[in-house]
Length: 307
Image 1 (cartoon, rainbow, N blue to C red):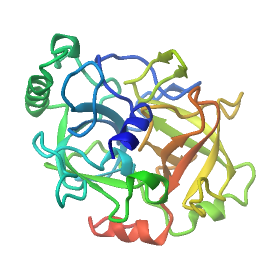
Image 2: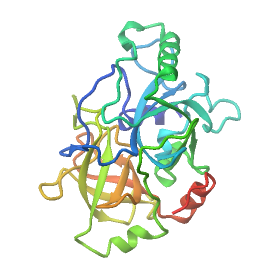
Image 3: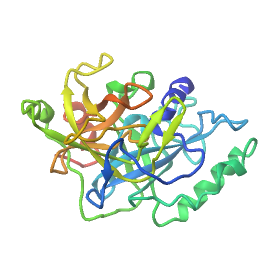
């Protein structure tokens, strides 16, 4: 479990020092077009954060409000989230029901409320958790929630059921909501080779072996579908999209965009959530987890959300 979570730390966006810049590779500022897309900040007690002597790490993802109390994101952005600082995977825990997660729907979330991690290194990681969670709890912009991964989510094969939900402690209404797809929507859209898609998220703008630029600002990019065959043996549960294309299909997804929506262009209808990249530079293609599958729609129905 720790090995897998460590491997996807970059994909989610490990938070060591709060920063504010751009997101979505080769994208543009969102300019208020998607007020229902927010940035997650969550704590996983089981993961080792290398500057510290004891485990416990903070991560970022993106997510979409589809009901006044329900946010759709990736499964790997919800599994193993802490419960008041304690592990949800130890003993008989299934990694579900964690409460150490907050979401912010501002275009540039304010991280100045959090004291820098460097002030807690190396042996005060528990104090960092206490300080950060206390600051987030009293902030009106950071909304508290509980995390629920897909019931069949398995971390070692995250791409098979990479869907998760946040249930907000209190209703929130930005004026617009994301919409769930009908079953098989992406297969129907794929027949139109000119169809484009809009990705929205708070991830890095540029990445490389020793480079991490941007993040923590909501941006959008225009993608084109590559194929719906799936990846890593997911048998159609995932789809691949173009990344870093030239105009007019400009944009791609990167680390920290995980869980963010991919919409049918010109609509609020989601076809999937950002799930994985294929390389450290976030170039070439990226993968989404499809939401237009029967088991996923049934899971979302348990939160009283339907297409």
